[in-house]
Structure formats: structure tokens, C-alpha cells
Length: 254
View 1 (spheres, one colour):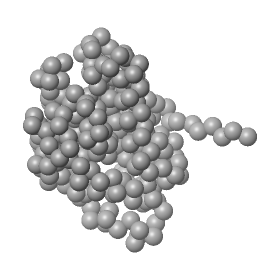
View 2 (view 1 turned 60 degrees about the horizontal axis):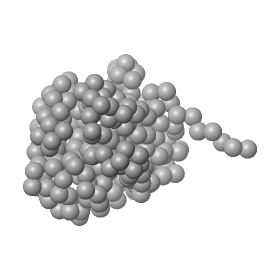
View 3 (view 1 turned 60 degrees about the vertical axis):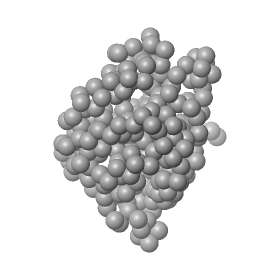
View 4 (view 1 turned 135 degrees about the vertical axis):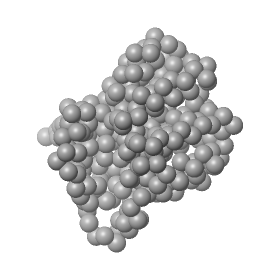
């Protein structure tokens, strides 16, 4: 009997062809879903850009499914969609953009492919909670996020879907991904745009400084935010974020 995996209605991927000769590949973060990137995607679509917001393996369903996956599969999905767009649209320029872990994944993509540009929002290098570095010692299979009722209501209002717990096996794989990308940043040559909020409760702000200093790109920019939380694509400064993304695309010729 075939088992059908149900994706949550707020975690569905999205795709629009656009009018301009450029695609933006949008990648969500760990335990999150395309809903974190949808408003940015709609903004870019309305500006004429092609947009693909993918759902990473193990996400949008259940924490148990995420624990069956690892960073190689998440990266494989990003790379596969990048190559699919390139093939089906005649080598069209594709700029990958990722939030949190998605930012780490698109930076890895930029290490391996000649992307026309790369954008990372709140990409982790150093995590804010030191307990995150002891996932094996904790002995827990799932670590509760303990979101307040107000936070859950806000997520629903914004069309977001994310797991209420952190699957620790998958989280251990995320930590391996972060260590791997730290050694590869110098290989990136594409123009790079980085965003980081100083009020981020999940990622230490010095993560962005580390990325900026070690990325090999000659053309790179770091935008600091003051009021946003971790998900800057939905934060109070998202208008500023969207404008900076749009200006970046125009600066690199699109």
C-alpha cells in the first residue's frame, strides 16, 4: 500500500514564470516552509521576475519526516531546482535566495555553480543558544520550541507553517552543513547580498560579519537590520529588505 505524504496547506511550494529574463530561487529555513518566503516571492513576481519557492525534503509534513533527512538531501533539492530552471528556460540567469538554513544552502550552491548573484537572510554560523551545540548530549529526539499562543496566532495570520519542535537528528545534520560551508566561502565569486538583524534571537549577529569577511565575492554587501527577528522576510522591516533585494538585482544587471 502506497503511503501518501500530506503537505500542510501553508507549506505548499509556489512558482511563477515572470516577464523578466531572471528567476529568483527562494529557499526557506530549517523546520520552516515556503510560507516564510511567499510575500517576498509575490513582491518579486509583481516586479516581473520569475520566482520558484521550493519545499525542502522532510519539511511541511511532520517532524518525524524531517528526522529521516539530512543536509545532503536539502541541498540536493536546491541544486536540482536550480538546474531544472536553467535547463527548461534556456540557461536563464537564476539568483538563489535563502532564509536561515536556506541561506546556508544557497551559499553552498554559489560555491558550486556560476550563479549571477546570491542572497542570504539570517544565515547561521554561530547560534544564539549555546545548548544548540549539544544535541547528542541532550538525549532528546525532539526539542520543543515552546512558542507562545501569540506567536502561534501570528504565524497563522502570516500564512506560515513550521514545526513546533526541533528534530534533533536533522538538527545535527544542519550543524554539519554549517561547518562545511565555513570552509567553502572563499570559493564564492558571485555578487552577494547578506541580511542580518541585530535583534535575531536564533542567530548571533556576528554570523553575518563572518560570512561577509570570508566570502570570496568582489562585490558583496551586508545590510544590518535593527528591529526584525530571525525571519526578516516577514519582519517589521521587510519593506526595507525587499527594496534592498530589488536594488541588488538591478545593480547586477536585472
